[in-house]
Length: 141
Figure (tube, rainbow, N blue to C red):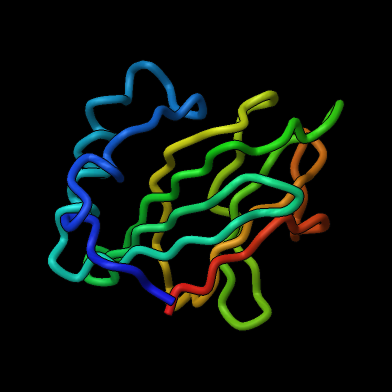
């Protein structure tokens, strides 16, 4: 279920770092994040992940974009990492992967293409075609 607009929580959704982005892109990513957080139609969805951790997804359907804040993820294990997915019906589409060892991230995702679910999975470092070890999903409606 969506919670209140991110603007109702000043600063709460604008913090965090992304170890998955290049140092040459932080200004561009900051603008993308601000555009989603400031969008009039922004909706916030939150969910705990298993065995621990949390995901907050801020979605702007008008901008066809979202911001995912992952925090407190456990170590994925040797040779493994976390992958991010948008799921439309039963069709997952990979939208990101955290660098090995990263357990917290702020990531811009999209386009949504009518996806109704965001997912996080624990996968081999090389990635997977579809999610195999899902650690959590967030319904986006």
